[in-house]
Image (cartoon, rainbow, N blue to C red; front, side, top):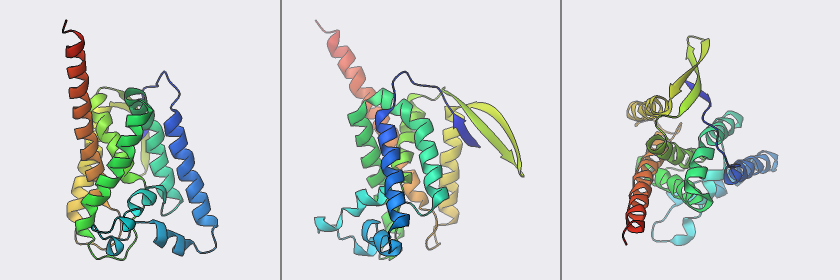
Length: 221
């Protein structure tokens, strides 16, 4: 099930466009630089180099979000960001949207770390951050109509499903994949996806609670 589009927003998603542009620019620099491997090792998250008591080793928790492992990796991430990010940005505003994106990415990486402890394999990509947006989207817009491409044995058919169906199916795939691949070295960082998504869900409930409290306070005379 591949999402193709969803409900349009009223405001232009400026921060979503900026994030996509930054990711594409960094990827261009990454592939054009003379020593790409050295660049990746310096700015991606390498668990063996992360020392929790040394703050100078923490910067890859941010920089690794803007690196990608290949063309399909970045295109897939940016596609999900473009489809689902605009609704979240309109709902949260630029500041909280960016906060959700960045912290969601960090939380996702931190959940993945115990399964890669002492590993020298670089972890990179915006998946954790984008997963946080998906978790938020699920809580705030479960009934949004999503246009999807249903695929089955190389046969595709375009149809529609609500966001709840699309995103619950997506996170279940991440959970099942994490269980079946927990002993593998390298590959997809499934727990980064799960951690980011879970943070997005929690963030949505917190924001709902704040909005409810604010609304109640405004009615107290």
